[in-house]
Image (cartoon, rainbow, N blue to C red; front, side):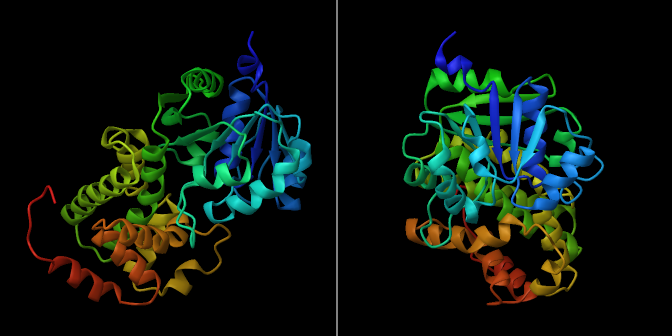
Length: 337
């Protein structure tokens, strides 16, 4: 058995929000021993005492293979790391973890977004904080509660190295959690970053009761925006047409289980941004990513009117109604543009 094949017998998951906890369940279901790191002491306590993450994933009993910890140093012996902090906190988290990282251990990036300010993808953040870590990206249509309960689903696993990618795919997959391998990390990242912003737009459509036709139009035209940005970054259109792009977009834009769509729904129903975010323990990633997506699109010269509208509404630069009117009055053009 090669070193790569031995890797992953002990997995570390950084970030014990709903998605991080669900991925810890995935690893446990695949037969791995899992160290789950949480920033919140109450999460460590609840998992230790009751095998439940009361704060972020209540009512889902967790595997006995999952050991919670509040200390990143406890992940030092792990051969495989799944990084699941919010995208805007990934750099600080990986910087803090760097002294404990096992040399050469692969890092699977499970955070979706674009870093504000630097406008960098998560793989670029990883390269700057853990330059020796082989990178992979896991992204796709997956609600944390469903995954944690063992309901069937499928995701994209992007990895540049074929041998490592094959091993990671086999390591993380189970009958209920199927990983499909690609070698296009940029395409996988672009889909995951943009879909959250588009989900806010779909929520606004639902909240304003603009109808199913408008909802379908936003998904379709939003997918065109996602594809344009991904290709401009160097990704491939066929990757974005897969689970990590189109698949994730359809799911996130179709259910208020999505924090991003529920944020848009509140805005569409007339709440202010502050009111829509009040009391939320987990901030929707699209709220943080929208300005970065808009700025990155401007830098690359990519036309993304729906994402631009969402960013403007969230920043208080326009109202929902004025933004919708501006979008509907854009010049007519070919669908391929």
